[in-house]
Length: 488
Image (tube, rainbow, N blue to C red; front, side, top):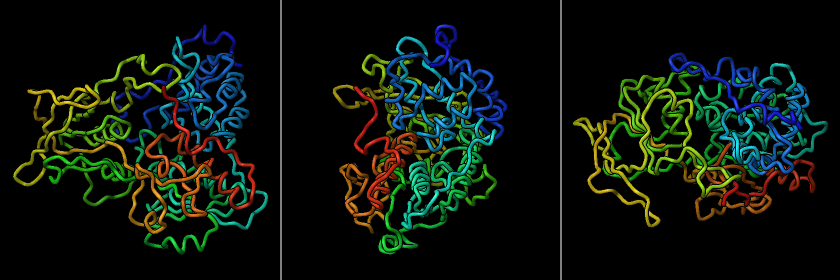
């Protein structure tokens, strides 16, 4: 264990972000230098707060099975090489999770029963950032090749994790991505201020040097087709994510200025990375309304702030969550509590327990206002509160209400794979779909979820594919496709 009295001596501390007035002027990460570097002055002491709890429930909070107490102890002892070895043993991409994961491991931390939990996520990102700077992250090419070929469709965290594991197992792996650059939502869905793309690019270069082949700019359904894909490869991994957005069918939906978040964010990310986007959707000088209170909504908020919106209002249909863990969501479950992201610190108003009734347009057919009404959750359903209707200005409306599963037209329909009742691709306990040799990893099979679940599924699916191709595997398989987060 780390410092035996660390949790008694030291309280929880996190790195300070750059001043709001400074960071909203650029697209760089909100931490000075990088998240890991900003944490180095305090991280050894924070790792020392990890207690000898006997049963580390943080393992159950994280689907990757990260060996958290061990790398906390190694950081406390200043053994950074040992720490990155332990971290990489269970997680291919800690630089992604250390920045983007909401850290269910921390809400499962035993110390969190009656104190603030260990800053597990911060220790993680410090380890990987220091490892990159120290040259401790090296390519791990296979010692031999199996002669088997695998196509991975989609280059988000699930696809990349599956590809890296299968490449290291000796298979020849090609990753197909329909966007012009590899990375999926890590590339164009996540704003630069949350994760600079240099971290993604460094990891992709490592994978290239290990032997993984990337084929960006290829929509497999139209460019190759299901039959040729299955003929060319011994196995296929579908990891295209859950990209079918949830819409809002209310009066005025057809007005101009109403867009899905994933129409708005990729354009902004491309421009932030130096590209030109014709007809870009901009928040500049507009009254912006974001419908949806999750991470995607916060990304829209931070992006709109940097584009110079006149005002930003974020709407959430559920009531404002409590500041502390509610009684109905006890430790070690992940509680729905009030959280403040870096974007929420910068600008915007958050309005809870409201529902959108109608979009109001101007003479040119563009949205000018949004009519909302207060709602209350009672009797198992949401009920409008009479007399609470009101209009708020809205010249740009962004839907950030989640996703309904993978897109069906194209490859999914061509393959003829079975779908479950929620529109996700069915798979058995070995991650195989109803079509032999076609496997499913990540949100395409699980539905919209967290990055740690995507990476865990990518690793587990890789083990299943390796077994399918060779009859056995030494690759780890952290979770079954039926596993779910800790709930009451």
